[in-house]
Image (cartoon, rainbow, N blue to C red; front, side):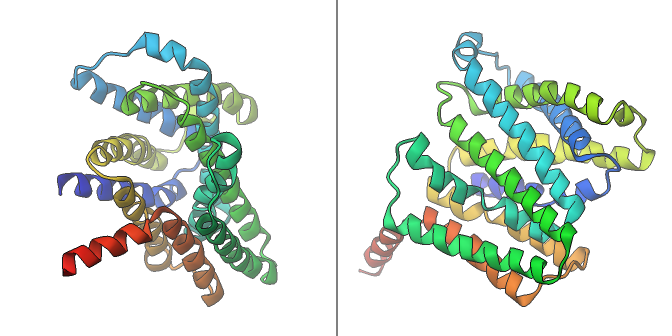
Length: 296
């Protein structure tokens, strides 16, 4: 039960990222730099409290994959934070949750996994759902909405790349891996931010400072810590189901707190998209057998 609560809390924390980002008066790349830097330092502090040590021999063996995965993490955050600037939190989140579909499409080529009929059907349903969401933006001629959804999809593609690259990281503790990826992402983002945005990040408004700390410590640091702590004692199917706390929290915030509107067609599209990605992870036959056993 403790693991379930920890994992749900981590998902709820991730679901509030869009709200927190809205109150930070900086460019998306600057937010990404600060969240990765602060998150890395916080998790490093936790790592030291747990009296763990970096396994440098293992790190060296995974160095190239860690660098590429850190590039993917940096790109993921830059585009995700950017998507919140142009569209509703709900639209940005739904675009971002296309990541599992990208993984399913790319896995046969990268991981040599079979693309079974069930997953092909889920991909088709998810694409149809996405078309409904984007189609409403086209009909409304809302350029910002379309750009925001495209940013969300780009973030999803980077996140899918991160998930696939992480499959190739061997014998490295997940918390240790996250600290390294956050630190490398910050290191890679630093020159990009200073070239494109200058030193504006150093003259951030006072009103933004509390939200920067929340983004770095709570949404990144504590969020990832609870995520890895909780998932240790959960099976894959439980993780897949509980992961949907994140988009539902984000959509709730978008609709109830910020009063951002979604059309009925976009709601249908979102339901198809989220439902298809959930169904792709669930083993329906196993669930059916389990129910039969409990009723006998």
